[in-house]
Length: 156
Image (cartoon, rainbow, N blue to C red):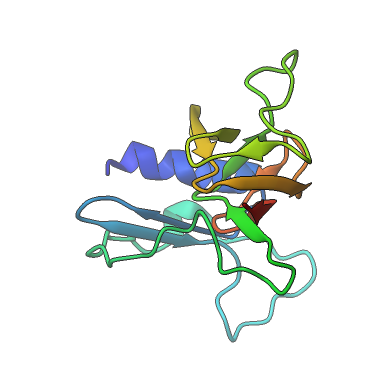
């Protein structure tokens, strides 16, 4: 990953008030955290530390991670479709278009349920399971975090 990419991620974090970011690629992993270091107390009105004075964050070796798309069933039998990245959540391909899915929509593993925009790239998110949408948990145009629940699905 190049320095300009890391700077773009930092800008995206600032713009969307995101405090933590994690990115895994084939052979590397990058984790960024913003805010006050643990153990320190900030006085009211303190300015955040400028990015230029933060220590260099080197990529670390990637660890095997389970796919974050679906969580274990809750006591209601519903499964969450979770965000695989941080970015901006969109329910439809354009503002004029109908949403990909609504409550009551039957989906299968290949059904696109939403788009998450990250670094000017539109990423289609698929249901990855067969079921019926029971809840839409995020409003279109709002920022989402890695692992945040987007939809609830009742498996069929």
